[in-house]
Length: 475
Image (cartoon, rainbow, N blue to C red; front, top):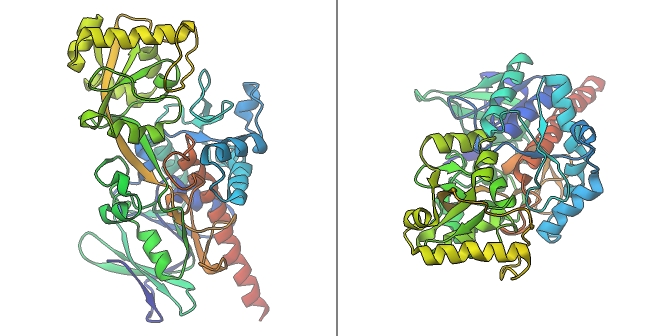
């Protein structure tokens, strides 16, 4: 088990002003922000290659007041964005953190584009659940892995070292919880002690720790975990040892559309543009537009914990714009059905039941019936088949949204609200803005906090180092 070691440290092998633990999106952005603020940085990563939960995601970053929105004539601002987040989380997240994250969201993307050659597209044509305007930005390839790879290239270009295959086992701290260094373990069993003046924890949450999931999110204890297996809750446990507070530990992002057994993420854009989910009995069971996070629970509550995404040729073509979906199609996860009979046979139910479910959708579109789950069907959007397409999916835990309490500068806070001397947190290591449960997650909240808090943590850590040096020089 990893520990905080107080008051027992000697000579460090090396010393770096700012050390970042974790090379996912939050850690890489934090490293770039700290270096751009005039401070030397080292990023420490347990894996052989940086990835994190971001690489498993669609890589969508919600942001307002961006040049890409202006080009698309999208009207968006901090107030509109904040209201969307608060509407989804029912006011259960810290309002100041929500406002600051929205405030810097566009600034972060502009900085990454202008200073670090990152390319972004604005996703248009459909809205993700809970968003009132188009504000989802992504790497042109529309995958989280492409975004991470591009950030790694930017970090290398900036001259920042990433120490891969280096697991942080211990944190060295003074009696008042001021961080002075870390200990890392190499695969060959050797260890190194690295001194630092500021420490940024960007090693995500605890989704990969079954014990912590059972304790804090018991409803997902037996669910598939679709995040990074290295998300073991280390940041939270270190923070607790140092006297930090934690908040909203039952909050998480789920997803109701992970293909099984292929383990591929199927874009929720298909549901938003007219697709439906049927359970293994051939029936709809929910309003698919309420959000893909809470849909995880709804799918898991169905017979066998599975559902089928059903859609038409038009939506299949939409899916192919996303590399994850394209890969799922190439791997055989996506099934094509020439008729309702074939579709029913694929699901394993009678054609009459499936036909009835599809006829209901047509009646909802025309206004002859009202969806019992409250979904509004547009007249022009529905299932224009055959052929029909289907993919068997399950609900999964993606990443936890509770974490270390932080302020709007990404400083980790004690239980009494005061800041720890030189500890910062970003991304899944810090509390998010998704409220207290699964239903408060607004699409993209995870990468919003990775980008915004990573940016703020890097700046704050570097500013603290510079401030300390000024004080020292004046003595």
